[in-house]
View 1 (cartoon, rainbow, N blue to C red):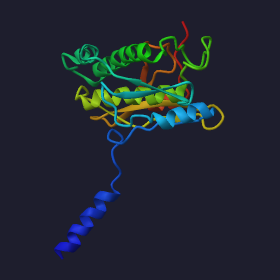
View 2 (view 1 turned 90 degrees about the vertical axis):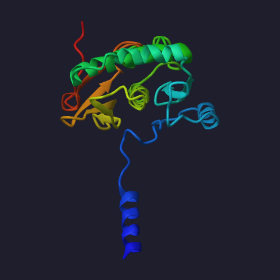
View 3 (view 1 turned 180 degrees about the vertical axis):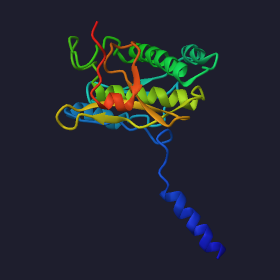
View 4 (view 1 turned 135 degrees about the vertical axis):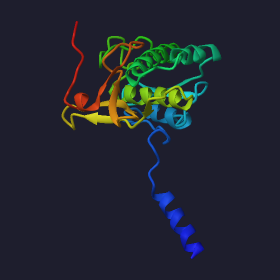
Length: 214
């Protein structure tokens, strides 16, 4: 009987899906060049990112992978954004916006993606530009590092999500407000490198939301 109970518990554990905030972060790739494929095989994406060793996607659909090691000073400048601890989930989302923008800035300096423009503008060439697949993956990496550092008290990092189907596909990172179980899109595609991402309720984002043009 005891053996059966242990076997049942192991079966339940094995079948329980791992939380999104614990799963390995893998890139969504659409490799179009043999050279890029070879590069990515030799330097695989870091699926469990830490501040001094993480990967980001660029070149559209993660055709290229950049590797970053933040200094202690740079990471400290991120953690200080969450001090004092936010008094509400809404205020924490503002902290997350600022942190992702700063992480994008640091990352751009290391990977040559500082000149990435909003949406799919490629005036500087496709090679160092980011599409929404890249942005969704990178924001997920940043959110994972913030969460692992226990900087998030009202939210958890969640899955990358999409809208628009095959006709007008668009991707985003996401977080869940833990108290209300409300999911929010964290969409950095609409801004230039280093600009704050939009964080809006997923239901609104799914409806086709876009920021208003100035």
